[in-house]
Image (cartoon, rainbow, N blue to C red; front, side, top):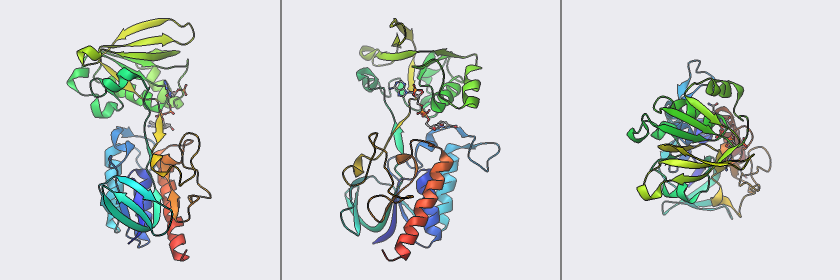
Length: 308
Ligand code: NAP
């Protein structure tokens, strides 16, 4: 029987594991499908304290894992299919295997939001992607016009990164100003290779018949005017949805699926704690996720020490 199982291996998960490991609880970290979480798909992280030159997202996560493992955390690649919080010990089914544990820290993070267009789905990995750092350098995108959708920090980061490969990057946003932080927005709009297209939505992706992206259809949301834009790739960067479907019906979620803690990191089920982007739609930063992971581990430790 485990004392602490951490579900998820992003900033929140590995920080929770570090603190639980240093409390001699030998936590088991179930990594999920994407070990290291969303940060591993980002390029340079410039706002994690302690790295004045910035740090590669993948490297940061690898370092966090090593640090937690140094004190006894254990990583297991696997996806939790069923979580039964109805009685203690809690029971998790991980790729068909049963794991019992006294406490659980949920740090499942969030996934990329999709536009919801049929052809977006049909052309996924055929020119439609959700990660510029993962796919931007592919030959199919080189020296071609590319489209990024979104107005937040992610869209700015993706657009800027893609200027290395694209002939031009069109940044399509549904409003007339960016939501991104000022420094990211200024940097993006100052880049001569990035052409913003304001007040516009992507209404379709072409061309399923050819089995690749050849362009997008746009609609100006103020005038209603429709147009088409040639491009070789569509990079969707419109935010995230929390990975919490597994816990629906057992834990309290808000209307968007974010886990709502009952007090601090504790949920409505004693012994189950939350940390990171699966319960935070406000700050959503690597450093805040790490802080939440720390808090969840301290609470789990106190819960166990109290013999609850
Ligand atoms: P975000 O801040 O939630 O921005 C999402 C953007 O997509 C918004 O501009 C939104 O439009 C647009 N959008 C949402 N749904 C859409 C839809 N269905 N169709 C078209 N557009 C849609 O998400 P994010 O940019 O992924 O950032 C998430 C968090 O991570 C933020 O806290 C951000 O600061 C952080 N982050 C930081 C960095 C960094 O500092 N290096 C890099 C990436 C992300 P509206 O503006 O109209 O709502």
